[in-house]
Amino acid sequence: MHDSSQTADIKRPFARATPLDAQVTAYSIVIPAYNEADNIEPLYAEIIAAMQEVEGTFEIVFVDDGSRDYTGSVLARLTAADPTVRVVRLETNCGKTAALHAGFTLSNGKWVIMMDADRQNDPRDIPRLVEAAATADMVCGRRMRRRDTFSKRFSSRLANAIRRTVLGDTLRDVNCGFKLFRRRCLKSVKLYRGMHRFLPVLFAIEGYRVVEVDVTDRPRVAGQSKYGFFNRLIGPFLDMLAVRWMRSARLSYHIKSCDD
Image 1 (cartoon, rainbow, N blue to C red):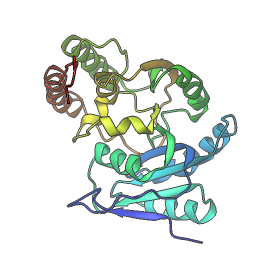
Image 2 (image 1 turned 180 degrees about the horizontal axis):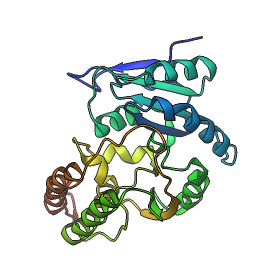
Image 3 (image 1 turned 45 degrees about the vertical axis):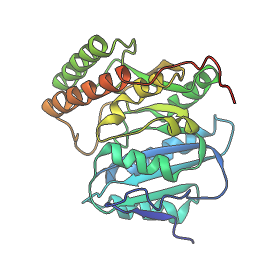
């Protein structure tokens, strides 16, 4: 069995980035994971079942973001058993944006489905995202009946309200980690640390069509959340100001003519 893992260079994370497979697939399901060993195999089984309802080939790209538990050994077992599973291993914990970027860069699907490894996103909603993509470049999950703790729900709602006020966008749940988008659109979007939260806004800035669909939100049953009240608000607020500047400073012009 071939070794399908890749290790990102931390100093130059994507300098050697190449597709994990030469054959282009229809969908790449990119899942960043940090200390999620107990969630990986159940999530994998749910994804395999859900993708039977979707037409087209697919790959599952897990990004091990420097996990300190036995996430790596679980992923190694999956790659040995199923060639559709790919693993990207980061040398150290670099954060969700870096993990997603590594997965995006090293995947090869025409469409990318990003989701969290904590199993709060329900893979059975994937066909719904795919259906909505017929008229959009990005489809964002909109979590219904949130199953998080009160503090998590409150901080998320507050962050969304502040974002809508500052950025003027109409999305209700931009922070949902469950999204589907055309991979080619990434050529126009530059990601920095923390900017994964604003992918829909960055897509909209570039003129891409962004829509939302309702998805199920499930309670976490294993592992621990990596976020608290303050790192859900302070860091994202500063990132939001950067996005606001990017939008206001974006070049916009129309060429009237060009004489030889």
